[in-house]
Image (cartoon, rainbow, N blue to C red):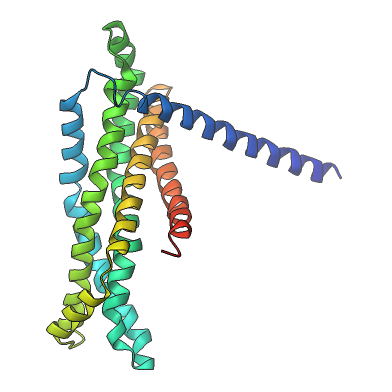
Length: 261
């Protein structure tokens, strides 16, 4: 009996911890977003973060999307060939890439690369008292450090996902034509016939939300890090793990919302 009570008590504490953390993150995000439309605007920080997320993440996102499109084509062919439905492969590739794999894989790559970097940078500033120094210089740390990164993440990831969509479809096309002996013109025609604006729109909406979540987790864990270098390392790990979990959770929720679209 005592064991059951201990389990229930532990479960209750875990739920309360999750709710408490969610509330802290929500308040942190609200504070940062409240500065979006209020001057001054730190355009240099915003532009630098856009370049860091959008441009320097292109190679890893591009390679991931290219090979993922090829893998989808190969796996689809393995299953569809049994039912002589190879003509559906082009539609499957473009649907999977635009709605799911493009935003999810790009988000996970950016979370590992940019989310960790944001957390480490802001966390280092926290433990070396640079954030406190900003306050003494009459500069709002939230407005200077967090708000531009949230805006940049929200704007940059849809651009990366658009590139990932194109390269993912190209990867599927390359595998089907070069390895599976598909007709290039027939594959392109099937791809165009299967392309829907709604599929691309869903992927871009997901990307914007994922970009915001990645930047939010990186900034939140870095801003609240404590304990020197060890604390910065723990904050960086927590930022990447939390961003990845939130990304996959919101992917399901958004997919459910758009399921009938």
